[in-house]
Image (cartoon, rainbow, N blue to C red; front, side, top):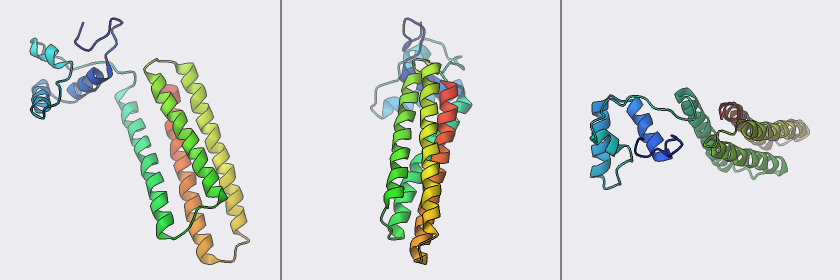
Length: 193
């Protein structure tokens, strides 16, 4: 049994992270990484003892997800977080206070983001049925966001203030695009758990 491995043969999170780094580097580079971690004063990863025991040939490991899925989910979450930050920045730059539609769309995004957190927590339990159900709820939340977006956009037709219409339209679109990004992550994570 490898250091960091449970009695069921499942690697602990820190060990998985370390093993993932090993698979992406040559073994000699992995030893450099171990040394760098030790020199910073942080505790060595659990797998270090395994490497020191004369097993430098470790080049593979198993995670609950495929490396491509880990990358895509990470990228998707990063896009969602950056979009949320950019929406706030753009609203401030355009000096546009949120209206009821924006508040409703933001609440839908927050609810779906919480659902994503639930899905990621389920990945360690490998509970695909529940994760898929939660992902479907997150997608349903975003379908409601799309409905709110369409209603809000149609209400802009009656507004005569061009600055207000332009600012709100752009913010509505950004919220809707963030919802689309969230759907992509929810669909991918719900089927990969």
